[in-house]
Image 1 (cartoon, one colour):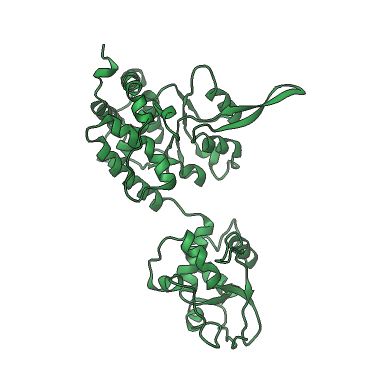
Image 2 (cartoon, helix red, strand yellow):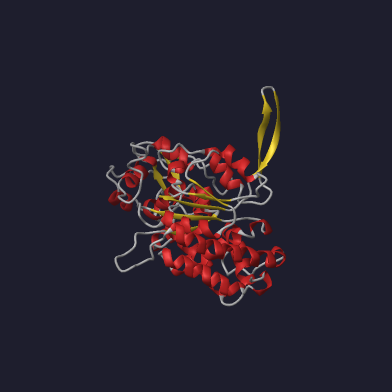
Length: 410
């Protein structure tokens, strides 16, 4: 019988990666590295300050998400697969005498999809359980004889589903965006009665190796790749610690996978509606103009084909909706962004000043890709002496509303 001391961690992770490759086609090579390290981390999650969620997501069914979760199931400790569970049930499972499970959620879109209604309690469980020491208060007892008791939620969780996830879960996840296999991409048919035993044999060896390196990873502070900080650092630190404990080429491969998948997550995830609004205002509306009436802004926004503004839950964005969304952000003076009066020859309509938006643009929007956008954010826009807007011809070209003649400023 092989003892833990005789287990070569690097070779063992190679075997686990090969096991995944037999049955899973992942969209990029870095995904095999990440999933293998996640399997190993599940045996050691209690040694870390956080445990990243593993999310297999795809836009269409039949993309291999459930099979990927099925293979993970054979490799992690105390696997508990579910397609539907209440937060209260999960709190009790995590605190059971059998030890904390590795939770495997399939069909997560039925819980968080557009028709699922949010499931805030379950979202709270998944979010809080990402961090060591997290717990939620629940009432225990019968009738009027009840008291509040803390229920821990810290445990490893893997997820599979269609579409996306709430942003708060995505930012806590290693994201694998699955896709349908191409005709030339072949996998070995998975037969549970045969292959589950092979996975369990790898799981047991992985558990033995994890016991041997537990003290090592508990004290480990792995070197993070340049540019990886904040939440991505929290997500990847346990996986990098596992890779360093395994040795071989795994530390190098882990860092490369970290950089690639963090970049892919940033590129692939839709930004929030608020950030998209700010970005569209900077890059497609103001473009160097220092102030614009609300009517002109809405005319441009509603005409953008690749934006949601013409159909916000069945209705176009209105001046009130625009004010509500922008009011969530603040100016450089730390006051909410609000419409202000803009003096024109025909009146004083309400509108927005670029100087009120610059701070939000700098904080929330990615670097501009157009020269016009850069000019709008490079500094607080300047007002030409005696004129409210430096150039109104551009506004006239991009809107269906009549050209506004602007009066000299008071």
